[in-house]
Length: 146
Length: 469
Image (cartoon, rainbow over all chains, first blue to last red):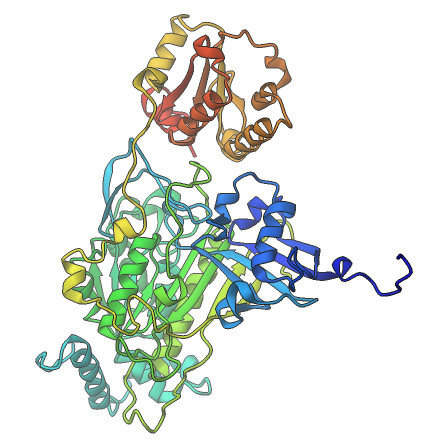
């Protein structure tokens, strides 16, 4: 049974680089670049896709417990761009893109400015004074303005 | 400045026709001696020439935001000789602005930012007409302000305003140069350029802000109550790059409708590109410091510029869409009961009267903030670390003793209260919830309390000299 010389397909790996930017690196040990060897085939025997990679990253690479800063309802959360070899993943088939050896996948949190946002999320200020900010009445105190 | 024709064909087309006519009339004008001298070095650059310079002089450009992006952008735009420069901002200059907002000055702290920046720009180049708009841009005034200009440079600092500006630019057919910067990262993208009427999809037209960033990040999942901070050179580079893009747009007339649309169908319909700057404090310029990312073109399904879009200027004025709600900016209030909260002043008073038992004062700010000053005896466990340890406790990989980090606190009497303080009083509330969830209240024997308003309140109520950052 063990006589086959072919490498079992399950053990094939793809060497890729995964980059995090715009603050997302904080969820991945503060490391912007990760060189990874991921399985070429997913649990269902299909070629590994971006959807598989996102799940793989959550299970294997992310040390921070705040997975909701990266995925929501099993999809990448709004406000994160996914770039496949420096091209918006929409140009490449989004989650269904089949990962190739040598690919560079970049996850970048979109920036909208320093006010209210760190890692792209909105803090709310319970005790702040009312100020007009871009016509948006909200409570805010001293903030860094872009 | 501009002799606009009466608005017969709708705002967008009349504004564009007005500009086109204006430029045709004026392109025969010759330079003054001062203009010739002042702009000589840029006019001799191949591709710029007399034509390009005249287009700059005859154009009207709006900078929204006179901050870290707006200051450097405005300097180069004014220096280049753009004829009319409008600046929108409702803030005043503060000392903490000056490390990056280099168009202001120490002597102008307290002055309106628009006036301060215009003072600076006049010193650099007195020739342009400077137009101050000294309130924040909002759904009521956005179209009125933007319609007076040919090109818009978005130098604002929050998502709701960015979506608003982009939507109005789509409806008024204005090219938009958008940039953002936080902490050590910056992003830049040129949108709606050349400007294309809403709903047109027969070619690969340029995207708008919503095509690229369909939804803002969700609210309520904030990482830290501490300020992200921002590096001057990073936001500065982005602002200067915005000026560069705006100058290109005007000099090559991309803000004007083509004289014959069919003769140049693919006119500058280039690959939309998002420039990403990622600054690393610990290394020199590397291969990934700047990345040019290929973005998709206008989306058929886009809420603002796509097919069947229902977005209108009247709708925006009437509050539709609701930008505040879209970006989740509605404030939420504490869920903690009042008995689990104490003001900074009350904590200080009780402590100085010796009324507090032995307790732990937990400070959840980032260590950079903590390093500038703390309340005596405070223990620093940054919020992120606290959450991480809390998650480990839940998984069974750590004990609750490890939450408070410091060994000298152990063993802690089971009724010793824990007071939690953060920067402005948000993380601390969540930390109190977390600690309770982990059973650290010991069934009610131990009080876990939030210090309302964090170290900012401590500075205001207790110690005015506290180095709050």
